[in-house]
Length: 359
Image (cartoon, rainbow, N blue to C red):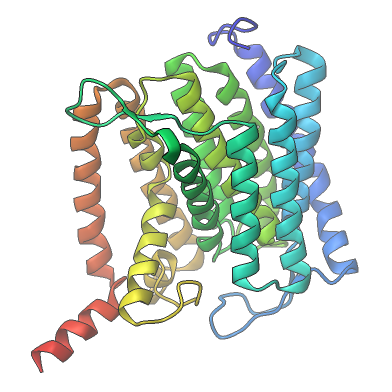
């Protein structure tokens, strides 16, 4: 594909984005009808913010838009001749199917985790696994060897669930993923990687069209079919980016996914300290804490969008900086967000533990 298009030729990119955007606008009402007809719905409880029953079938629209847009791209421009894309599409279909089953039947968390792991292993074997990692202050990259597949599986499953966990407010996960996919598009252009650029634009077009129905007050939720598919898709294109551009370190995708990753890691720490199951939900995620401070639903979502843009700027810089300087940039962001997270109370369990020790 690198030989098919120049990254400066924007007509194919614009065409793909517009197709995905309009397909999303057309298929989302259909997804809403399917959700209501087949009882793929979200019933409110004490942890959730919404009040009424909502269809959680938005993932149907996002997946259909991706699949049809991909076929359009294939037929009009014929960019993907590598057979690994058949396996990639199979993985996307499987993760979407898993999410759809969960939306309908509320699968156990462990079952979802096992199936996600199996899909990630399939991806690692048949599509690509991370072979080397560029580390700061080392002249040569670290060859992962037999750890290549476990590392790739951990990354894919982690990012997949990170996007699933932040899907707590109208337009939050879809907007964050939309910003992340646009960031990947720009980074891909900077690095001369049209493959990931096209895939990123397909997803961003699908998500921005979907946001028309998913923004507060939402008419439809992503559901697990949407959030798991989005998370898997984003994790996959980040790995494909690393495959195409060998000099890029993992710092760039970490910055692009900073909000989902940090929110997930903080949740794991909280639950470990409280000796609760990792998959047990709570109301101390970033969006919950902002709401508790008095911010409105819409304002909370926009604050998180701005955070994502803030970290995306760092990702643009890290894509062009040496790995050592990218590390300093990442440390700056980590310290900044740690101070912010502590300030708004994302670690209540840690505070209670310290108080008990003092008493």
